[in-house]
Length: 125
Length: 139
Image 1: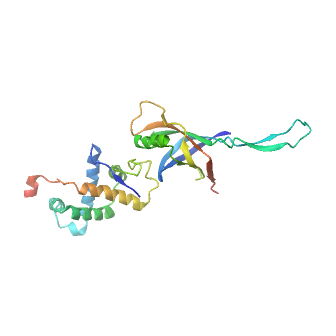
Image 2 (image 1 turned 120 degrees about the vertical axis):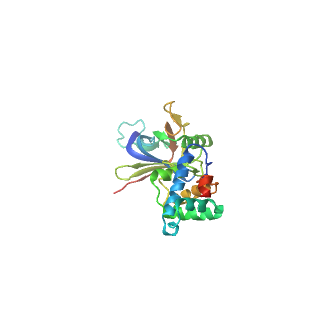
Image 3 (image 1 turned 30 degrees about the vertical axis):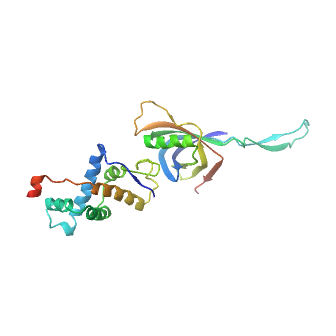
């Protein structure tokens, strides 16, 4: 399936970013990250090389369940090969793998942005 | 013959991508193909000769679409300009029976039915023509 990524711009990016952060929160709840505080976890994510961050986001997409609205806020930043953003008109015939692939591609694009979850003071502490 | 399909979901396949518009109010289907009878000037001929009429004319589907996005309308506008071949299908919401028009074209430019539509919710009238109609009936 051909997927075109749309520019991460406009007010809807806020909801997409919130969904992305929920994926990270979900990951934080896994036993391997339970020993970290939330600040430590976000510093860990922020300081990670972009490639490692993409890898960890792939795990989050597989393990964390998003609500329908959260999924919709992510997939609208990808379009089919005719350029129509994924939404109510063109998602009903997608299989689960295609759905996951779209979520994965958009979250990878967000993961490649420079994250800025914490203030400088929070990072110092 | 003109008839209407009610209570169905309609989909359009453009370049292999399926777009579905749930709960279309009605689809008007126009099928000009007819079997006709004729005879010569002999009024005692009670059998006559059969012939087909209207087979040069395509079947025509007309439907209003509610809540179409601007992105999809743009794709359909391009399909009209480029005379792109499309697949159009209507699926009954009652039992899943379906009717499909293959190798169809948009015969009219997609028309907005109201001017104050938003980009997320446009009301558009579409008209398709096709010679290749297929039906699937569910038991």
